[in-house]
Amino acid sequence: MPEQNQNPLDLVPESTAKLMKTMSNEPKGSIDDLIYCHLYGVVGDWYLSEISVDRKIAFGFQIINSEPVWEMDDWVTNSSKWGEIPIKKLQGLVNEKFLKEKDIRFLITRDLFWEPIKFSAININQNTLFYPGTTDRSFS
Image (tube, rainbow, N blue to C red):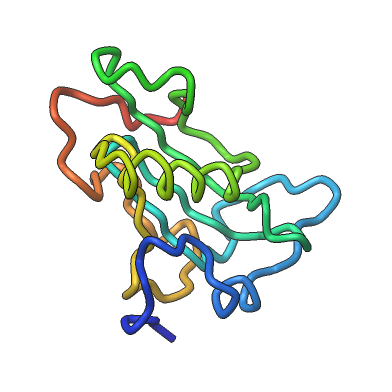
């Protein structure tokens, strides 16, 4: 059920986390994985399928396309792959860098209209936001 009444800057609220699978010891990621939460920002997209018991780390597919001029290397690494996603770190960047310092590079928000969907049904080649410059959204 979409959560339109919630704060989109609260990346993984308890109500969303409760819907998600608990992270397994060795998550692999596949096109059949159910994606429960979509986060996006000017640097990319995160599609979350599992979450740790302490809610600090999620597992899912991430597409990060930070342009060199954005100087984001200290915070995010460009990638297009399945893996662990540091929710606590991302939330910290939103709280400190975006909300306090008003740095738009760190605007990361949750899609409030997201419904759980299989990863195979998501068009990852379509940018959620239009990024300045060119980006590479291919699997690598």
